Image 1 (tube, rainbow, N blue to C red):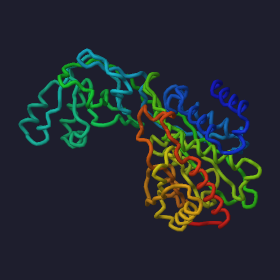
Image 2: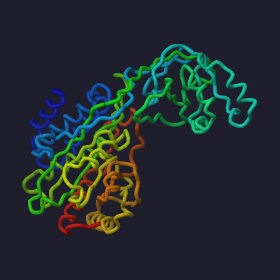
Image 3: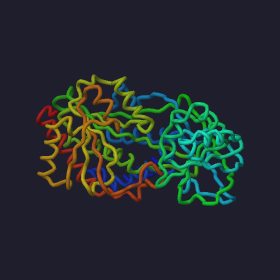
Image 4: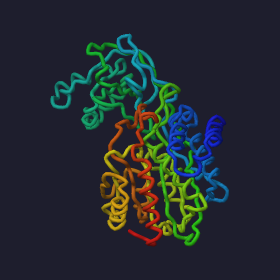
Length: 430
């Protein structure tokens, strides 16, 4: 962590003007720090999420934000998580595939290593009883089962006795037609599972050599990072800004998921807003709380934990804005819950038309797709903002900072601050 802090302090020394206002050089520095290999994808290997949390705590302290719980910025909790602790290896017909580029381990993969002959899935098992009986007489303990991604649902619908036989295979290889997308798993499968891009898979593949080392941690300790600025006039009325800082972590030390758009971009926006309102001339009328959530990728766990253990009454929240996937904006902005809180959405549209921030603002209804959702379910008025267009990198090692265009980042910042100002001026708009 010393290197992270040193680099940030060096930025402050060589460019003190960056601390005076929202600035794209500072945003880029934040993105570079959060997506650096030092943080290993802000996940569950090599203390990646803890390193990110300590960096955010440092930034909150530097800006003068106050902690909500005594002198602590951290709200700690735990959950089970499966981790790929060593970089997976795969050779097909003696030729090594590239981890993170040609293949990844499935997030829920079990451990395993060795050699195996390949057994392609016979899709006739789904329609012909005789074919199924013949296929399931095989000794699966000696083979690696290979099947296309689109067959997973049909495999899950097989009789239990057939599924149990499939779980005896030495390895499962799932062929992905387009992209390698991974996630976070809170359980571990009985067998190792590798996902391979279909276009790199040899047509005459006969045998594989593989290694997957996974570890299921039943109580991974993590933390939300929370700070606030007291309101100058109505401190009991609260505007909340949220963003999840976690991502998918790494698979060993060689493969990591930088998570630039998802969600270093939203975390950078959260920090820019905190920087803006921490300046004396911008001190807000309402109290503003800045929540950086952990474990969003594991199922919105950080925000659910907060709603179940709030640090002040939820009824005091006048409005919440959740920030996720804010690295583009060529095609405008999507507002989840825009159809739920129509007056607030119309206000947002008027502000956008007045200042011509974005080409369009689109509206969706309720969706359980980010950290606004637990608050919405608890009755808190909330929007989830994400930008449209730009980059297609998502949940893979290609979502790195350099490819993130940040096309409309300053405009989104202005729209958010205009919206917050209008909310405070109008008291409440739901």
